[in-house]
Amino acid sequence: MPRLDYSNATLAGLPAFQIRRLQSVLDAAARLIHRSPRHEQITPILRHLHWLRSPECIDSKLVVLVYRCLHGLAPHYLSDYCCLFQPSTTSFIVIIAATDSTNTTHNCRRPSFSSRRSRLWNGLPYVVTSAPTLAVFRKRLKTYLFSRSFTL
Image 1: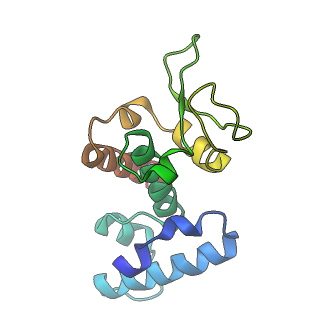
Image 2: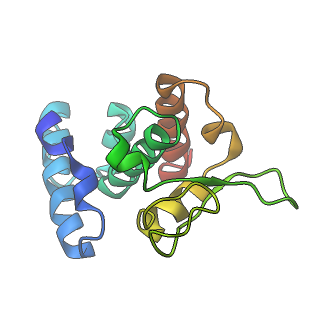
């Protein structure tokens, strides 16, 4: 399992059919661990093992990377791609993209991460993004993604 999960953030943007291929490998591993036949529904097995589906795993890795960048836990060459902007009309903090290397209005020095990362971060509830530590953030993020993926 760790080899399948390692660096899966690099899989962001792959076509859906290739993500489904990865999911089928994860499903087979879950069935092997759970010792269930191939025809059995996979959702209860994944829920029992507390495993996220492939798209959620990829999203999780991307959002954790953004969290690390925003909190100074990532290398500077990555942290320079993220910046915070707080609009005066709301209390929500969002990731914004600098359009070029000269835009330093909000301390952005380089073009931002893809809009997918920004959209993922901005779509998270405040209780997740306001986590004080990386460990708490990961726990809240997995709980949020798990409940979104497997509505109980």
